[in-house]
Image (tube, rainbow, N blue to C red; front, side, top):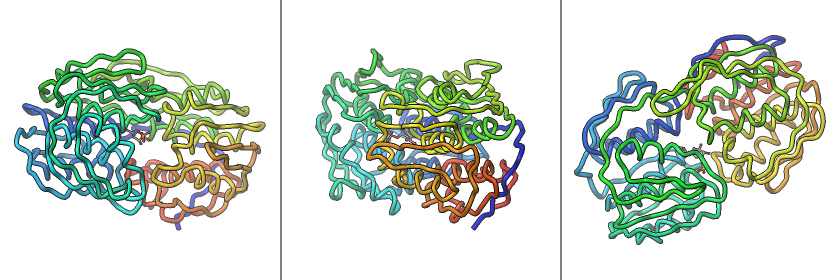
Length: 417
Ligand code: S3P
């Protein structure tokens, strides 16, 4: 159990790790393209290490030097491999589309949490392109068999960047034209990177269209991850003042700022610039009185990974907040509707589960207490924020899982793991 002390004041300037979504894509796309690329500020969290392991197993050459990766793409993929995707939903879902597109037979496996997450959501749309993918009752292990792919128009029922990306990675190697349409736009890092690598790709509203294309390696300078910065931004709002440097502010990812606008959190974007094809800024957040908010399905994709944290902030806001249209949270690394509600209640807050979200009745002060991470990195880090902001602090059981996306999170907080 890791004890987290409450703090009256929390201030500082923070450099955050590289973006998880961008790192996964930089490794996978370059690993299968022509040429060589250098990736800087890559995230070396466990999920991205899983993508590196799988791409190496397929034959890509990846040299890792701190957060700099040198990648040589392979035209000749190893076949019949068993690829271990660890805890990473992005690895297994993107790799399913990638392998189907390249005609690679492979078996994709994952840990207990990943093996409980739905895989038909990628197998089914990929089958429309002619892919032969066999899941285990809708889950991993996932077997991919070589099959000729053809273009198709795919309409997704859920807004999911992982599913959209799987279709695009298959579509870019399929005969003809593939389009994918989602109900609400999700993060668009795959589209951007494919375009930078020479793909014939076009975005029109919530529809992305891609044609069969040869891809050339491209260097990527990875911005810092707004999903990791979010914890330090929340601490600024709750307890003082924080400055998070060089954070990616791609508009498909800045839902946390929409939540801040509604909550009444005071923040400023400084030093805006373009780095590696993505907009970045330094984000200054100051202590602010917060009021209750309402969020619905259209708000969810741009803050999908921040919703546990947003719910926690609502627990410290004035009034009754309502978050709906977020049932995707039930199939993340944990059932994040259940685990977030448990976390908030365990530290003295008032949170009611809805089938697709939460009702949170805010209190100015929460007492603190002991909580579990449920082996979910985002719940562990949300818990740390909740406890620092609480009256008495408390313990987090199984906090090490933060290494999935933010290996030195507790160090940066000034807490020894
Ligand atoms: C991700 C997409 C999101 C997100 C995940 C990363 C990605 O998942 O929750 O952490 O990199 O494409 P879904 O596509 O399941 O919403």
